[in-house]
Length: 115
Length: 114
Image (cartoon, rainbow over all chains, first blue to last red):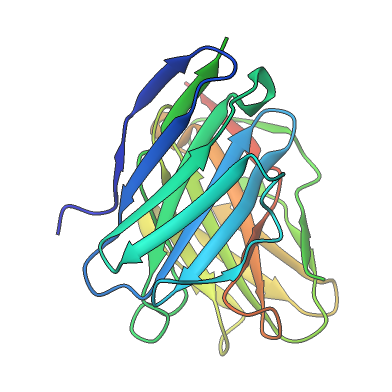
């Protein structure tokens, strides 16, 4: 398996623009997580899905953020409109809770810079 | 709510010396505890976990960690550090009652000097 695939790896955009980050989890994994990493706040869990259904979105900062998982092999995190304080590295991770013994596999991350 | 504390922002150690990266946790039930490592411009990689059983857990790259319930700690250790161990290390906890959510500590930078 190629692991968790995230795109784009780097995104530079201007304030007010829409940003869409994409994630392909490992095949067979039933959980998908979106984390955000910043120097100030460390690693924050934004939202996670189980079998494509959002389970906990309490970490989503505000209404400008939304996440979807239309099928088992694809998820998006959208920011609209983007702001400079959204600049961070966004990680997607997936997990097979039964066979994977709670171990998350992370993607390489999407580094977002909002000017 | 579960939480993890990593009291040291950075740990410096000489190559060949033993290393310890500290972690304490707080959960309402029995914890699942994890260590992950992050190299520059990379995602996090799993090192080891404690679920149940022996308090001393062995993981990847010669790392081990000791679960201490009375001190609510899960320190990461290695008998002999390598320069290539230099990275950012995260402790994480999953609360048995908190669904499948993993909460990470702030991270500790490990610098191993030759």
